[in-house]
Image 1 (cartoon, helix red, strand yellow):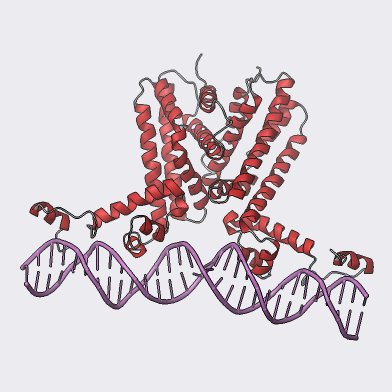
Image 2 (cartoon, protein in one colour):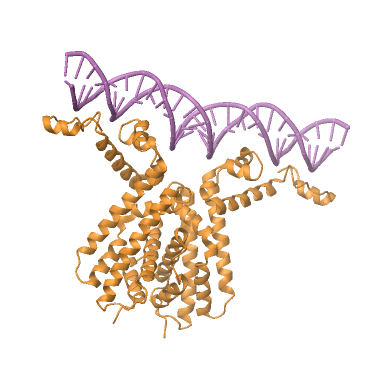
Length: 213
Length: 213
DNA sequence: GACGCAATTGATCATGCGATCAACAATAGG
DNA sequence: CCTATTGTTGATCGCATGATCAATTGCGTC
């Protein structure tokens, strides 16, 4: 870039940027990313198209293409963003508790929160779409790894505290992750008629981890 | 139908039906259904389009449309067929064992069979597509209900035999189904690096059902 | 062996997709 | 104030989808 960023000049001159109209590249790019996240949460990953995003933000589809030239990778990036933010929320729920046992329970409990339904829908769609979008498949695997590590660390803490007796925390983490994904996917289709989801789940995990007492 | 079925006449006259060329409506319709199942297993539910099916069986897409006028319902029906056939296989595995405990183990074990990967892919895609295909969503719910009933009956048998102590077999069945779906979906993305899937799963279920001993 | 029913085809319409590019216009910098 | 940069548009291409329909042709029946 040989010219200075318009925003820098605006800041220097104290000019007020019009909210409508032309925006700085960084601003516009971020707006596109944000709109894509909202669109995916509202209508699914499949709704992420140049035209739908452009329409939602009142802009030509070609402008979206200008900032995101390869839609496949943009879909993958949007999935990663949604999954990452969601995971951060779950981590934050965990950090609200103290003690290895309570922390793991908070983690597991919030992972089954029905508020996460929209996110689960995105996950399920990503599993299916990953079949034909390699970039997305990569993002899905990375995000699953991150979740497994999150669970593994929580389980390991419990083992270190003498709460659990489990030979292979990593394997147990995969097992628990599978249960979380399955139960959430199930809730996506029928959230009714399956009482005590969390209760039974936590109990099953306790057994799985060989909880003492 | 005022005219007799061509096949009846062919049978009477002993004529040999040409494999290529014109076929009886029932024959053609069945062929279309079969091709759709194969296509979905090979390339996913999303591959079920008038043109893809027509191309695979060397026929005009309009002929497929003639027999299956609403593609959404045809996708739903194809999913139901795949899921139903798969479930029948799992039931058959169960019936190869005797005794409530062995039968349930056979059921659960075959449900995690890696040979079912293609079917799992169809399930995952159905969960996602069901969001915009109501007929498919209905089929998915029906098939999930059938699975839950399958598991519930197996668990109930165990309870009746005094093998398990579980207060609510129906709720336990949902729980186990969630675990099956989650672990299978997981295997779809990464079948490697997750050892002892079946082993740990069966163990977790034993605990969940309050197995004696 | 001719007739007529209906299985099958091919063409066509409207829609939506990603991608591309010349042209336009808003804005920063001199 | 004027110019150069560049954010932005609108048009267009090629492709795929579901749907529809008149025309064709294979085949059973009389």
